[in-house]
Image: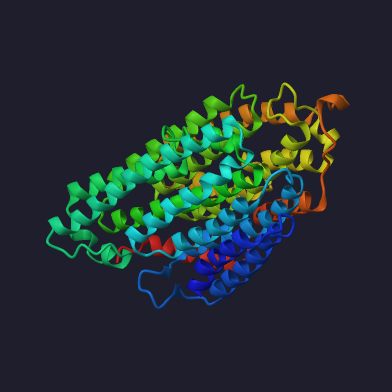
Length: 478
């Protein structure tokens, strides 16, 4: 099944590159997405961690959560992409479709990788296949954003590679086997050289933190998210960042097994709270609503890292937040893409009255804002509240207080921008085009919001068990 999840999207990408019809090619996206989602559900319904004939490919409990989130998000985004590309008949979608499909295969490889070197290769590949997607609009700003994404991401991934080498040397320095399989690293983690392990963690945190968009390594995000099509922004914010966080989870697991919780906790809490603070500062007075979503992603990566830094009491909320944040980002980026298309602008100076001009997208954008800022009864409220409870249960009252304060700053800053977009009177006819919401560009966003709302009202027992298994797996030192 691992090969179906990894190879099938890549094969479909090759088919998309070969298909001549610009009109029918986008339909390969939902076909591949449905097969991938069905295979994902089949694997997850199997109960035990997935395995394959290749020992480097194992679907562990944290990987299961990320695979489910990315597969569901991609499935709904694939239908949206078909509707979106109907409005972009002015240029070929061959590269766009092929890269999106290849992205699904590469991200699946990240979730299955149990060799830290292979995982690094898969994350680097995700950078390469998403860069052409950012450049899809072929403007001066989009090519600038693409180069910034490649350059900053390459520096980060190079540091992650160096950290991986340091991790291998931590084994060699202790006279152990230098195999970088996760099982091997966990098995002899207590005997790893502590100075080399500390250095490896710092490099890996900075490296994979760059891919996540943690401050101050977030500089690629506002440009990339601001210039990419909405569906690409959704996959970056809900796919690439989730897989980079999964890589950080695996490094965390090794350090936890080595007994270095106190050391890594301080770094994680600082980076997480700093990211939330930076996001709050840049959201206040933000006029570009797509760049605002980029800073929202910076904030939520900070929330995930804070939860990881708190440790066991907050792990359940942290892993649940991977799901709720990824799905909610889909609501925000897709609805923002519709609004941008209708107004041909991302600035609140021109964009106003979205709920009047686009009743569905405007309403969904407002609901997505309430959800992502932790308002009940949406899913992010449950996950963020669980992280906050974990902070107080662990006796980290200062962390909990700062966590609440930064959430408030973000709510105020983001709310001011969103309300300017959705309220007021829509501009006169010459200032906008004739775009209106359609079934393919509206229904997937409604489905995503329904899932986010459902996770806030009731978490199904199988999902609870899946998250519980992941928490137990990460807390196991063996």
